[in-house]
Image (cartoon, rainbow, N blue to C red):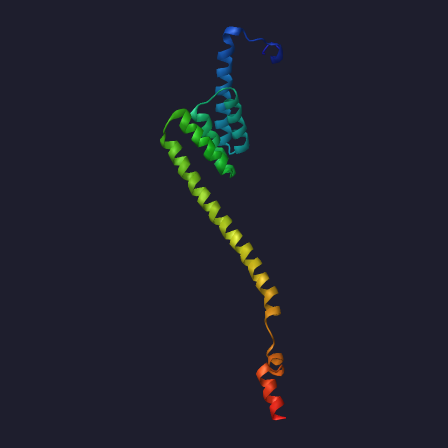
Length: 159
């Protein structure tokens, strides 16, 4: 690399392949932490995913990706990552705290959606009520002028 040889020309000896893969997994995970600290959450997710794709099934990779996904608003994927982090590394206080944060965010999101749908359906119900109401209502002037069956018979008998 330093001598000007492109990295694509390098061949890793067979006995060093696992060492190189391990270094790549660690490097991607460290990059993810840097991206996270710099609030580049999309890049953090990408680096964690690269580390996982290289075989890093550690709870740290899933946990870090879950944190970034939560901050991006992808709560379902964050929760899935936390489940995988628990499977990979057992119970951990940081994982439990992040899980609680996601649960709070999901409740807030659910409340906002409920409110939004209530407004939307409430408006639709009000519009439907306005459309139906004029057809059912009879103005007072028409009801006084229109004789009923009982009044017509009494008027005919009086005449």
